[in-house]
Length: 132
Image 1 (cartoon, one colour):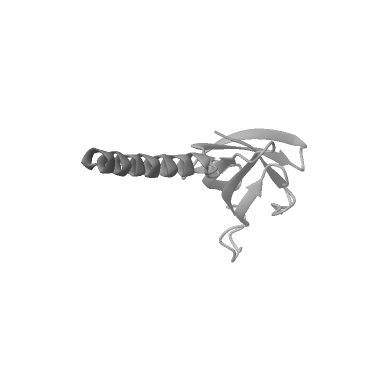
Image 2 (cartoon, rainbow, N blue to C red):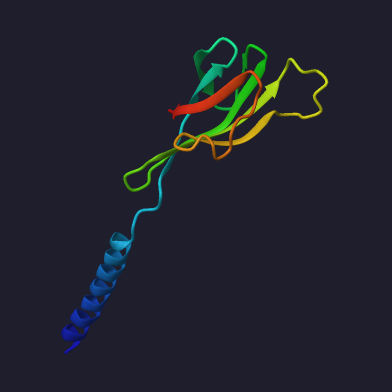
C-alpha cells in the first residue's frame, strides 16, 4: 500500500514535469533581431551622378564630403520569408554653418522601403544597403 502511494506521487511529479516540458517546447520562439556592428549605405551625389558605398561602424561618426554620418543601430530582423533590414542614422550637414537644425536627417531607414522616412538633401541621397 505504501509503495503504491509512492508510485502514484512519483507518477504525478513525472507527469507535471512532462506537462511543463511540453508547454515550453510548444511555445513559438520569440522574434529574433540580429544587431549588426556595421551599417552599409549607398550615397548618390546628385550633381555628379556618382555613387559611393560607405561602411558605418555603429556608434562612430564618419565624415563624407560635407556630411557627418553616424549610425546608432542596425538590425536584421527575421520575419517569415521576408527579412527586413533597418538602421537608425543621424546626418549633419557641415557645410551649412547658418543651419539651426542639428541634424538634416535623424531617424530609421528601411532597406525595403526607403521612401517611408526619406533622406532629403539638395545634393545627396542616402540608402541603406545592408547590416552586418
